[in-house]
Image (cartoon, rainbow, N blue to C red; front, side):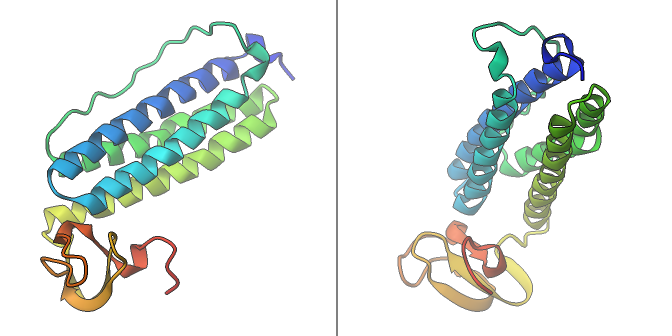
Length: 198
């Protein structure tokens, strides 16, 4: 196994740490745009994903602990996605997550394994799979927004208010929650509600 200090894997770990840290901030900024557009459910999706990106950053950072106190110099390109439209930010996020899955982390994982860092390679590949799921989720919400179906279903569906937990079955989420009076933007399809057994 190659020494981590002289490996390309070390640089890839730092690139991944930087990328995940930036993704977390981009999603936190996007959550603010969703809040301004009165879409708390999409805000929650961005915040939920931002927290997972923070976890990824920490995983990559921890692999570099033997270099604590040193500076690691890398090159890299990172996206700039600025918009005042939530749907644009969902689409950009989808693109970035798929790129991490399809290209970046697969290559980083393969490189790590080639250099003898099997565990790091495995983790890069596993996190690549998570990024694919992130991209799928962003795409689903963007598609619903584009189709005018974020709060409307083709068939009767369960809906949960993320504020108070009220559940109802309808084709469309109500304009106002009948229990807590929060706006429609707080409703999510029941199958996507957190910690809910279906």
